[in-house]
Image (cartoon, rainbow, N blue to C red; front, side, top):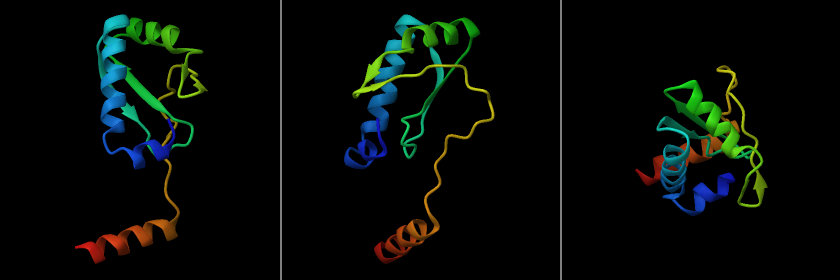
Length: 103
């Protein structure tokens, strides 16, 4: 996915998490948490499992697959890398101004 997918369809994130969660539960184990970084242009999703075995199975399942014409890279998260993309200060100010006008 790309950030525009979330902008164009307000339900995209929920649908992505639900579809991914159902497949992973059936093939790997129940995910504890699925986090899609909707502003990250790399299409980053972190999936947390209760067991390392389920995480390992997920990596095997997802590595090299294709989604939306992009090949998936699947690996253990190092626990520290922050995939959050911060918006530029000018963009944030404009968004807040628009929100204040709306309110």
